[in-house]
Every structure is written in structure tokens, then in C-alpha cells.
Image (cartoon, rainbow, N blue to C red; front, side, top):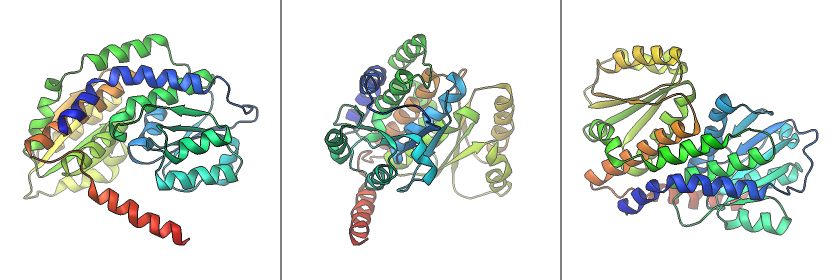
Length: 331
């Protein structure tokens, strides 16, 4: 099973372009007016919801004609009726996202669905809503470039974000050339640790948070992410105290001179407590954000292999979903 996940990560370059084309196609005739639109909202959770976070991070690189907002809940604020609302669920069956979709319909929002099918796909087809349809058969966390490409293609077609063709080509080549060996320094730190801490700064904060998700699901380790400079005002205080557990640290470096200096401060503090590995990324771009995520995903799968853990098995999430469905059915 781990080998299948690794194969998916090796196809990320193709997934990105495939998703981008799907987004463009779905947005060629959207069926609603863009007049009086005040912004763009992304609603989704987990491996689907983080796609909105990556898109917002890329707003700092490529700009956006409208403000971008992420919602990770089952409800929408009343002001969202004036926003284009992307409802994102890889399976199309995420319960909280379905509730978000129903709220968007109630508010008469301008809806664009992003999924491989499921309830969301069926309803989008039935109601004649734009649907960025991506390939099925993957785990949501392995489908990041498919869904991110879908959003970027759609936003580009709607003239909300300008995504240069050379940026897509750079990302394609970067992802195609990322190898399992690139993950080895981070595998070593994580494998030898009881708890893993991943820190990132600025635009690359979302890469650190993505690593937290990947290592939590794939390795079943205790993992936390620290988001700088915010974490310098709270989380970092925890490192005033020595602990008996083996703690490993991974720092995501890059972005701008201020973040580089912040990471220097953070790494010096981390080294007082355990082994540190640094992932050095270049200036923010689609290529570098996805490369950071790709290396984290590969590293988490390799750690799972070495610990004889099935990276695909997440029975506690299935249990949560089953119990949540019963609660929703009672409401």
C-alpha cells in the first residue's frame, strides 16, 4: 500500500496539469454573473480543504483581483452570498462539506464544485453547477496537485488570478524530478523521534501544516506544526522546558530575508532539544510550495514503512465520520 502512495506522489507533475485543464474547462461557461462579486471563498476539510490554503498562499506570489477566504467548517457566514464559493471535497461525500454546500445553496451563492464525484458531483450535475471534475481512485492527501491545479485553472479562466504558463511548466519539471532520496534527511529525524515538530514561516507556513497532516495520517506519530512569526509569540515558549521524550524538528526555510532570519532563531532554539533537519525552498512559487509538500508526503510514507505502519489505514477517521453522520441524521 505504501508503494502505491509513493507512485501517486511520483505522478504529481501530471496531476497538476491535468487538474489545471479540468479547472479551465469547468469555468468556460459558468452560468452566473461575476458582477458584484466581492471575493472568493473555499470550503473544505482535511486533504481537500488545504487546497484553499495553498491557493491563498499563492495569492502572495501571483496576486488576486479579489480577496480569498478559507472556511473549514460545516457552515458559511451570511456575507458569503456575495462570494464565489468553491465547495471542495475530493470524494464528494465529506459530510461537513455537504452541509457547507447546502448552506451555499440556501444563500444563493455562486457555487463551483471541486470533486471526483460522490454526492457533490451528482448534485452539481443535477443543478447545472460548474464542476471541476478530477480523477477518482486516490486518497485525498495524494490528490493535492489535482485539486490545486483545478482551483488555479478555474481562477485563471475567470480572470481572478494570473497564473503564468512558465510557472506551471516550472512546477511540472520540479515535481517530475523530485526523488525519494530528497526526503531522506527528514525520514531520519522523524524515524528517531517520539514527537515531531515542523516549523514554517510566512508563505511556507502552509507547507509545515501540510507536513503535520501527512505525518499524522501516514505515520500515526504525534506531530505539531509551528507557524512563524505567530508561534514566536506562544508556541516557542514550550521550548523553555527540557523534556524526556525524543523530539525531532524540521524547519521549512525560504521565502524572504525576514523569514530566513526568523528560522535562524527558531532552529537555534530547536537544536537545544533534539535533532534538526532543514528543508530549504526557493522563492515562493507553485513549484516550491508543491515540492515542499511532495517531499513531506514521501518522507511520511517512508517513515511509515520503516515503522511497519500502514499509511492508508485511518480507522479513527472512519469512526468519526460514522458517528457524525448519526448526529447529523438526528438534527
